[in-house]
Length: 460
Image (cartoon, rainbow, N blue to C red; front, side, top):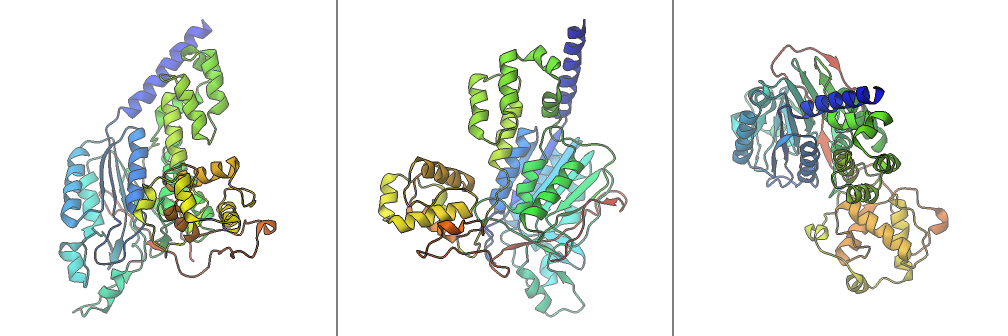
């Protein structure tokens, strides 16, 4: 009898989780990097791709774009607006340049060329308030994430332009407030700028989002608390995400996975065999993709398949402990050209240079002894470094990857016993060399302008 009750409870639990995932969920995900009139940004297009993958894994239909012109961005917004009509959850994510003029926030397509306030208001930029209201106003729950808090190069041009009246141009985005059923989150506080992060990966804010918002059974406001903590810690308190929320209920982006992970042993056994359950218990909290893949290989249609896939996605897009020198460009071929023994031999690394590679890896968080010999352990560490940066993971280096590694600024974690006079290890400076994203805003969207603060401001 107790087993029957447990089985019935499991059926109801799983049904409710699946029903939640069956809700109509639509997302707009765009990252603009390749600006034509100002210096390009290294990460927004990558940020958008990572976010889109995470959202699809938890049931969102994603309208995705990268490096969009004004016309292309408008077309994507029209598509998103149509799809989000009557949606249970509509999510808006944008990474790229944004600007605040006289307290109104605008997002910038890659072909934007702003010389005056008139250029902004006559259509060269995307009005955030109007856009959110027109595309998401009909959705029951509205989630807005703006990683558009860079130090905008257009701001100085507009400030210096002759105008018939006063114009205020902020370094970051201006404060916004959420309407009913809305959560808005920004990379940092109003008027502040935020780090763009390690070139070729994700910004600190996006990295924290993809690591937390789709965690099994984690309510979105609890997830944003984790996001703020992660960004604050990763940037050594140089950046604190800000937000405003007026949600009227609990929102889970991954409720079905929560059902599987929270089930008791008795209930889980009703669907999974004893051996499979023990296998899953042994690796469910792992940070190693290979262990999760081992589960999927043994149980391709297993009870915890969805959980394993979501966990893999979270690890692959998870936080990095490194900071790259953003003043040095990374050749796009670095992300596609394979490396092997031949390509590594062509670099001509002597023992001292191999030690330098090992010391750099240690300084970037991949602990390895600086022996000057590339043994199996070193190959494994190189492969992990390559995978973390999106390079082909072979365990061998080529000239482009070696150059990219040398462009990275390592931390002070390098052991003094491993440091020699071959080449000094560079350290992170407190000054320039950091690309920035600009600050918070809020949706003046549909509904009253009220709610409680979800974050705080952090003054650099």
